[in-house]
Amino acid sequence: VQAAEAALPQLEAVSADYDELIKQADKLSPAARQELADEAARIMPGLKANAVRIGSLKGAGELLSPTLQELVGKVARLQ
Image (cartoon, rainbow, N blue to C red; front, side, top):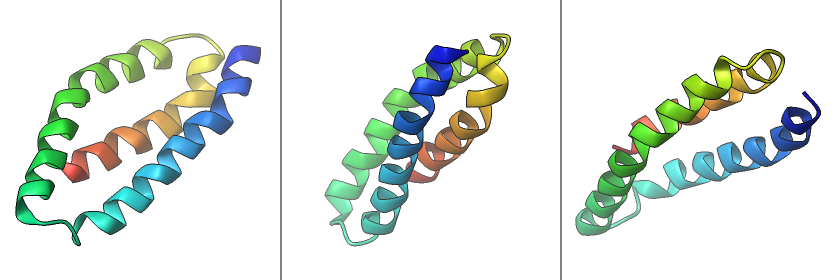
């Protein structure tokens, strides 16, 4: 659980970075937007698998799952 507590601020920072990326995505050229969507699609399977794996860990899962699920949703919005 200590490791999860230590990781939570970093995970929240990544989530905030994705908020900013989502805001800026509409300003990208169509080609750049497609590259972003392709990259989001590429990372999604691993992100989902890690979210499920971490979510199943006693203690850590309860702490990190909400933020991980938010992150999955944000990456999905970029696809």
